[in-house]
Length: 215
Image 1 (cartoon, rainbow, N blue to C red):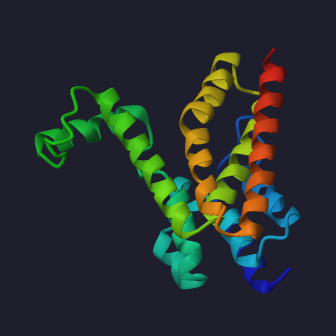
Image 2 (cartoon, rainbow, N blue to C red; image 1 turned 135 degrees about the horizontal axis):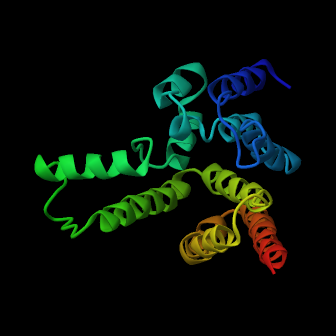
């Protein structure tokens, strides 16, 4: 393990140290698992660093510019693509934020939200659109995101059945169509296309296993 990768792991451990998974294990176990999935398929060190840091900008106070300064712009780009839009800590604060933006006209009238739920839906689709368009520029985004979802699917034991089903449905309805569209991108390179098929297969197997576990 290189010094750069050790530093990335230490940073992830530091910034995630107060966070827990749903089973109350240390949150750092998740990015480590995502990194190890990529490591198993011989992804380069830069991709492993992006994997270990993939949740830091979304879930902690670490800034994307700091990742760029400490490592490479490419890694910061990947982490940024994988990070959902920053939002207040809880639903009430997010709704308050939405109402304040409406009052100050910071939300464009062109978006024409009729209620708060539409605004939440809009944020999610902004993320999906960014994810797809940035995968075109950087394939690592695709593989880290799928590794992230594979581990999440294997780690839902403490979720109620309704939430498990909702997570699987969201993945199938919104993410899989994007991943299938990415096939045309990866067909341009034999090496990437082979890896694309491997990861799609891993994800579909994980979805089917998660469904069986619920039944």
